[in-house]
Structures are given as C-alpha cells and as structure tokens.
Length: 484
Ligand SMILES: [Zn+2]
Image 1 (cartoon, rainbow, N blue to C red):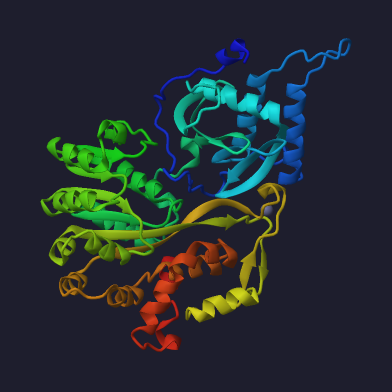
Image 2: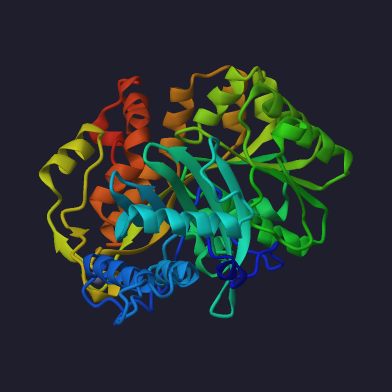
C-alpha cells in the first residue's frame, strides 16, 4: 500500500449535522436528481462501462517506453468512485469480490445497480485503501469491522460509514454515504398528505405519551423521527436520544450511542436517560421486553417518548407490546400516535406513461378487496432518470392517532383484527389507501406498491374477512382522496 496515497482525504469526526436513515434509506424529494443529465447520457449501463474504463485507466497508467505501471493511484480511483456515486445519488456503494474480480454496485433509491468491475487485485487494493482511511487494519480480517470517517472530496466533506466483512473470495466492503442534502429535514417533505400532516402537528402542539414509527427495515422510520426532532428543537426543551448507531448529529440534542461491548444497551441507556431529567426521549428501537418496559413506564409517568418498532402495521404494535409483557392498561395509557410507513420509488415525471394495470397485479389487488384506478402509470426511462424510470423516493403512510374508543378496545383486550377494522374505515384509511392515491396521481407505479405493501397485505385481508364483511362494500379505500 502506498503510504502517500493515504494522505489525501482528511479523516476525523464530522462537525456538521448530517441526515440519513439508520436503514440507509433516504427519502429524496423531487428535483433531487438534477445533475446527471449529460454526464451519462445513455443511462446506467453506459455509466458502468464508463466508470470501469475510467477506473482501469486510473489504475493502469503504463509507461509507454518500458510498459511498467507508472502510478497505481488508488486514491484517485477512490475519489472517482465516490464522485460517481454522488453524481448518481447512490446511498451505498457495494464492493463485492467475485471469483476473478470485484463487482462495484451502487444502491440508488433502494435498488442495486451495476456500476463497474475491477480485477481482483485492483479491487482488493481499493478496499485496503478505504479500510486504511477509516483506521481499520487494511489486511483481511477474520471478523466484521465497521467505522465512519469524514472524506474530503473536491473541497467538500463527505460523511461515510464503512462496513467490511470477510467472505468467500476476499473482503466485502460497503460504503454508506451519509449526506445531509439528500434527506428531507421537514415533516412536510416526507410525502405525507395534508390530513396526516395536520395530525402530526396536532400531536406536536400538546405532545404526550408514546409516538411510535413502524415498518420494515429500510422504510425510512428514522428519517421520520428526525424530521419530528427538527420541529421539536424549536421548543427549547431537553431532548435526549439513544441510538444504534447515531447517524444524524443534531446541535442542541444529547445523543447517546449504544455500545453493547461496554454494557450500554438500549435498556441501560434508557434508564440513564431518565436520570438526565429530559422532556423528550428518543429511543432508536424498542426491540425487547426490557426496552419496552422502560419505554412504557417513561411514557405513563409523563415523558414524551419517540421510538421505532418492527411491526407490519400500526395495530401490530399493540400485539408486540402485549407479547413483551405490557398489560392492556399500560398500553392504553402510553400509546398516543403510531405511524406506519413504507418507501416507494417516484416515477420519473419526464418519461412515465399511462397504462392499464398489469393483469396479475390487478388480480392481486382484487384478492385483497381493493379496486384499482382504470389508468395507472408505468416507468419508461430517459436521460433525466438514468434510464431507470424512477427518480427519488417518497413515503406512504398510515397514522393511528388513538381515540377513547381505541383505548377502550385495548382495555377490553380486543383482538388486533378488531382494532384494524376500525382503523380501516377512518379518514385517511390504511397504508393501501394512501398507496392507491399515489398510484392514481401517477406518483408511483403498481409494481412499487406491490413490493412495498406485500408484507402487510394479508393483515388487511384477514381484518376484512374475519368479520365476515362484504369486501365489495368496505374493501374499497373510501377515503383515499383524503391523503392525496
Ligand atoms: Zn425518466
């Protein structure tokens, strides 16, 4: 490894706040992808060829006289890779060893795209270079390692996180780009309809109890919580968080990082937070009986607590809390608002085309009791979207703001399907209603909805069938327009 190449980028801790989702999933708004035009006129496939050629040229500068390699400039190659990833608005760069080379892929709007391919030796040199910059031993390790660093590229500071694992064929490295400018910082930028924004603002005017955000990994939960934090910071109150890892640093907020090796678990951190006399608590995730117990107790004793929880829909949080040993009385008094969300890719407005829904997807929707609009939109691909057909992502939402009747139902130990049926018929409706509204307006495609909502589809089906409801009557999203 050439020591001189290590001096180029500065390594250190970031001072500037940055925003990215803990799941690495960015919510990026319209107009975010602007500067790719012209740089890669023929889209991702050409990008891959171009980047591969550029990287190889950078590596293999041969002396025309001797045929010897003059300058194996691995730092230049690393810069080029990051520059390209930024231009493509990639959230992550994957460097995967192949049998005879190294595959470089970019994650753009949640989907991996081929970016370049290097020889095995070149690829491993690039990985060793990044590891050395991050203060890790460049030699292949037998255990997973991760670190973060500030990389200076073209006089601009980039916060990146490196994760490296030993695997068949060498080391695999993932570089996560933590870029503030790409992430919405305001609640209004998340993609929520006006009705839901009002509900959130209503909660913000007299905050109390637990505010939970649910959804699978990569659904933008952390982005939503941080958008809330940004609004709350204005209130000049004490806010303490415990996260794993701290991805966004926000001035004026006390942030603790989970460190299991040193005994600072979520549960321990939560107890410590309570001793700091905070007004608001943010817990990265409620994931076990101990953190659930501490969180619920904090909420019922008058603290405002925000957290995320893995469940397929808002009602699933009640079941999860019950399974972790909370009794109905505690749940009913602690829970205030539950947001359920998914991320879908936005159709590129320049090239999307109207089309009839695909037959198999129409059948899928019909099996759930949802009727699709006659005309939906499909992706095509143009220069503006790098031939992908999508540009950026948006959240689709369902918000459960508990009322007295909900609390009575929880207290009477009502089954989750009873609670779910009630929610389904309220203004705003369930995730599907929001999704269908976005489908109708051409914001996203049916294919995206199928991927985003596949996991919770069965829940709605059960909720409507178990009650013997006529799906023709209550299966349609009567209030879909409310969130449009
Ligand atoms: Zn396009």
